[in-house]
Image (cartoon, rainbow over all chains, first blue to last red; front, side, top):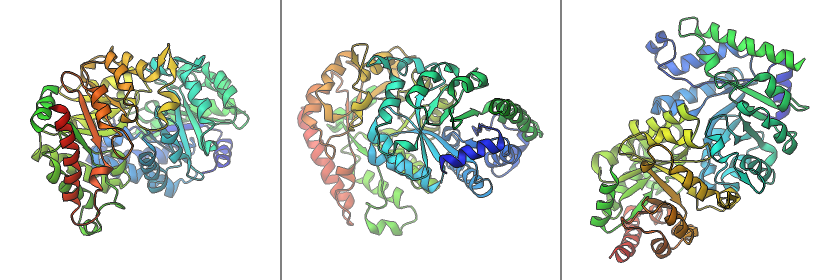
Length: 270
Length: 270
């Protein structure tokens, strides 16, 4: 998907919401466990109930790998369902991969070509040749971890390198990589004020912002410090939406939570 | 597996060789493609032909994910085959995972408990709470990326943080994490002289050293700078062994290459 199509979708739906499909069989409604593929049935119901309120879905691969082959099959079915029925959605494989060049190429092909996600999250520690194989794919996006929303972000990401924090060094450096126009960045909402500095380095890039809601970040602060002329923001919510209810009304309740966020976003976008 | 059992195996076999099972269907002998599960058949033949010469096998998950559900099934069959028939082998899921705490816990369970690998490689960028969930597992090991063998290692890992390179900061910091005695570290052989500094920080830890052979590192230099009183080294070779031949003699030729490395190791260990 081209970035322009994502921007158009945001303007049309008045939403820059991304919904994280982090499916945990211990948390989904018990009646789904009797179906052949509870993970997919859960995702399908959530997607059908929320697709007009969000512009992006983001399955985190850890939750699928945790169920082995069955989990991987559910991931395949989920992305296929999205690509078939809601091809306007910007899909993100939240995989946080990264390896030496030829091996990263394998991950890139798996997520961007075979599974046909629009984008994949990638870790920067191994540098240029671990990320560039992802950037080769036309009309696909690589979402690089810059500043994450967890406590451990302060262990290394905010440490000073060359008189600036490591996460800024990562962003600066990545601008010089081949096909860097395919880059987006993960920036946690729990440090919304950091977005101001980041926007000086990458005024035009899209940012994927986790940590609003369950992790405590404020949507208004993210918008204030993070927006750009093309909106430039995807704000993710996972647990707060998909586990709004564990009853038979789970999809309806998820829609209710998504609607609250979409309405806040519409106000900010107005 | 306890570290003592790994050390005993090294002494018994006179080998600290790890064989990387990075299976590429474009490179394996064509006659295997006619079997139901070419990836597993290839691995099984390689393992049967080399198990007495090495102490560890390391499938890189990228090569399995590249084949989707079939790849994941081949990975499950491979680790199950190892655990059933060669339980003395120290098995490594080369996955380079890492995510926020509860999500990392999912990866940890998938690789260390469900698939029952002895260890998994983990990326450090997201810090303490992204790694500690892996460290909780008794008699399992978490192999943290410190200094990798690729060119991109110089982008961030060797940058100065607090008057030391980032990879040293990573190693120093990780020593304070809960259950840090379950940590091992990835240190690329292409920078063997760096091993001397690393040994000052972690004299007792095991190091997994890729990059000998195809990537140009020297086994003698790794031994010279990297060994400790408990040997403390696993040296990996992948392509140089498993793709020694693409004919029907591939397993025999792989054994030949493994034997060369094992004999060099025996000399060093003597």
